[in-house]
Image (cartoon, rainbow over all chains, first blue to last red; front, side, top):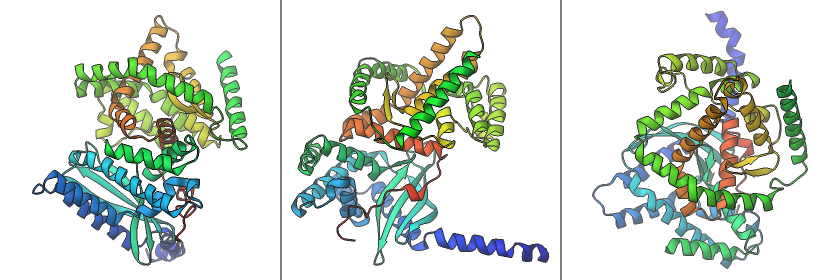
Length: 199
Length: 243
């Protein structure tokens, strides 16, 4: 037994060193677990009305998502050298649109449980946290990955993935295509997002 | 002999497309693709969508589930061939055992006791095999009626069809059996996708780009068997101003 342990110690050490290199810190995992609990609590709260729930969920989204970073990302190459007023208008419209889509779907959720199953560091301050959501409206457990950006000790979500689809990547494809088809003007996407939110 | 020649020709085409894609944009056929996308959309709205919604209305979920199970069971030879071609011996064993269990205990595949026993499906197609072999995707391609694809996966689709036992074994009524299998399978897929497509129609900002991105991401996920390639994820700092 001791012989085996001594023989395999170097291999264990290598794996341990490799794992410390790539595994995200517990801070990101704790952040996702904690924020998911808060989010699910809002969704499952039966004592507040729909309007209050929408407001509470909107505030929750603002607090956990780095919407400035996501807005720049979804603009892709059009974010380069963009006038700050044009960007702020786009960010505001994009935030509003995203919330309106989430809120349309809020009533479908309730009763789910959420477990963090691990994490991995892409690079310092850029981690992917793996989770499984089950129960409630879900027929089968759903694996969701959260991309968490940490800067100056503050963690924020910048993307999430389910079934292999990264949401921000998906939105970037659509928004950059729309802008390209409308003369390369970011204002066109801003206007369309405003119209969609007002529907 | 003709089959071998056909497969060799298709493989050569796939490798050529892969090689070309290194130097070219990834939506070389954008004009054709947009027209085909709009045509498919019109056909879907006029025919496939109403049929899928009607099918869902008149068949209870357990019945649809059993039909889907049986069709998935018939795919086992294709899955097995591609498990082996990709060198996934464990998956090949699972596919064989699943086929045996579901074809017998599962009453010709109508039920899926293998999954209950912990032997999950390992679906693979020839497009995925080509990707595992290093063939690039080639240009994005919208196929008539079938929708999003690319050069590599289109070649893979043809190989999947011609290597399926339904295609290879000659028997009376073989054509009817092939067409029926394809039609029922397509109907099942369209029915399962009703909510997804409705959601895309309602919420996507650019439908063509939305379908394309979904297809490419989902295919990448399938090729990697759900594993994540963290180095391939886009960098959020690329167009940033404040970091």
